[in-house]
Image (tube, rainbow, N blue to C red):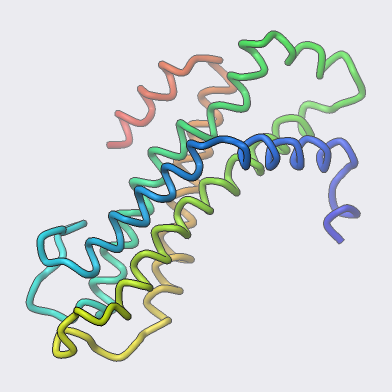
Length: 195
């Protein structure tokens, strides 16, 4: 079905972007850092993300939503520059973007393929943090009195109502500014303005 929805060139560019980012160590480093950070915020009182409150359950919907919202914002900022701006800059720095536009590749297929591949890796980085929060609930050293019932709806809400829109909005802004200006500095300025 995916192949019928999009053109062949979009599929080729999207698959290339996936293969390119899958080979980059930055994906795994950022995922590991956010996993450890979110896991640590769940299992330790010494690590607080987003103003977590210590006298409520570790896995309360409020705590889960606050931690995942903060992590999604952080992952969108980091991954936005790392993944959303790199495909466009890479092609213009290597002076191959003009070659794409002299072939049968449409600008839509080229830009949307790059964008979708980059956004997928932004989501992968976020899901590593989500996994860190989720697995942190099941650690044996956590005081059972600090745990409430497992509420998957809190994860669902934090992901679909907060994290995915955050990542899409910030990633789209960074990708748009990078595409229009062809400057990494402009991407950083956008991120500073968002902060």
